[in-house]
Length: 242
Image (cartoon, rainbow, N blue to C red; front, side, top):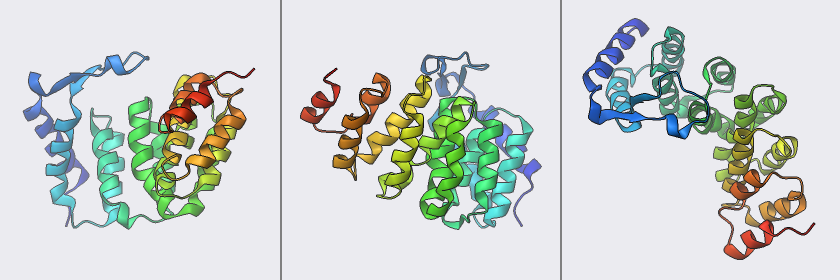
């Protein structure tokens, strides 16, 4: 029988306290434009060590139990629990079912408030779920119209795992079309990153898309999108012809 959420939470808090030393801390503010409530915290390497160690007690637990524990950790409001919930959800990706999209979407809407959390969730649990069950991709389309910048970014970043694996290119271009003129730089970087990753499998198609839309595409998104293209193609894409 897996440990209860309360026991897991106590264990995590104990490990955090034991590892909370100056050499394990990092200042994250320089990576964020918005002011963080707690800019300094344990570095990612330390958090991953704690996560791996504490997950051992859950390795034989059913996927729904692990996701439920993650949900409880998030609801606790304790610092760092978002990291562990998202990390543990990714560890059980082989057991995903389409029904889990509803929970992951709720996590996005309720607990994501910066680009780091957005990308952790979307290139992790959500992206892997969409890759395994492509029919779920249409459920992220409404995020492109959200007033919340992180949901709009998530609409793009959630497609990175599938497109890296040669899937859902049409969804990538559909999403880029909707977000093309978005004025938020976090969204621009998100869909630019999505297009960049698409070039690994579809370089010609992405280049054609960029050339077709570069007059309207913000330069931030354009620079991200062409980063993996050959130098000559990047130069051509960046050249103003208007």
